[in-house]
Image (cartoon, rainbow, N blue to C red; front, side, top):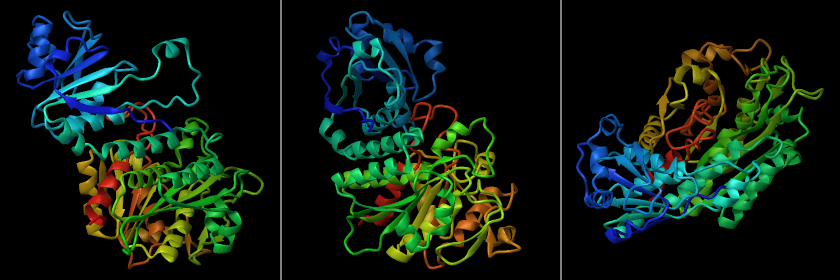
Length: 493
């Protein structure tokens, strides 16, 4: 697993700035005011920092961004990064500043001169989240060997103990995000359903209860819609159940993730162009896994169960066909209109199983479910659907707090008629119009009226085409922070 950087808070020592090697980051207020560390840097560089701050380049710099002064006179550092940030900066701006510091650092040592900035913990979190690279399948080069392991990250602050305490949960949260990114970035020939389940089983070491249900057990339970999706693949279908019991006797929050390790579309095969990104169709299961890791590492005082349905959707003589009728674990029959609308079939059985076995206090599912949500919201926000206003409002607040974009879409009953089938209780696809909404309505049929439920369609935010604000190009880990915040705000204490 990719490991977040080791970030240490230490007392501000002006005398150590001149000899710091690698990179040094210093903060300057938007009005050009230099704090104590910046004044020392300016003195060491014989006024170079002040000249840079007086330039048009600094004036045009967005808050939270920075630029380099290379090989500064009077300092051992390779570069001083000048970062524009106000003392009263928002969490979002502080995290963006941390990400801006992390992006160019490579493996060099890094000294961050936070000084009196109260947002040092948020800067540290942004730095940790951006300091990620997925290199599992790249051969090391000679330059990699010369650079060696990444250097340390030191944050000098006026109250280092207080800052470290405020940032104490950041390592656990970053680990959860990194696990999600590693899983979503992994190729499907490496992250098979079995390998995925094995990765999750390893989390028993951090205190999670992990149970892997194989095909014979799924058949006995009646998970026919989930098994239908995987019946054309050589990789066996599985359901993994992860339990964190930190909240006494309280009913658990259930998190359910779609884990299609690769999606060809099945018999309704997808176009070839872009199909390589379907390795990320297990993004929902990746987020659930990352959240469960975070909760276990930070010893959350809540009961949470994470369930992921792991399958592969392949075209084969045994694959399900358009026109097939399948009976779900709930007992409803489903006409398969499009085999590429497979994620909802996986979720239908796992949602029902979660309610049958765990009687959850609330249930949240996540899935890279529809292309329609990208048409509607692009790659900036995930779609939120819910039967419970309190749950939806709490999540939207958590997502805003954690700088993760989310937007609630309607779940009106008027859309239900699109799912009517001539030959079965429902059909699995209602066509292009309002595709994300009708998909949510399909899932809603497998949620009891008494269970608060929320569906998150993360197709646009799990693997965007450009780098994210807090991630390099590739998987973002969107949702780990927001769901961890939801658990902390609504289900702990």
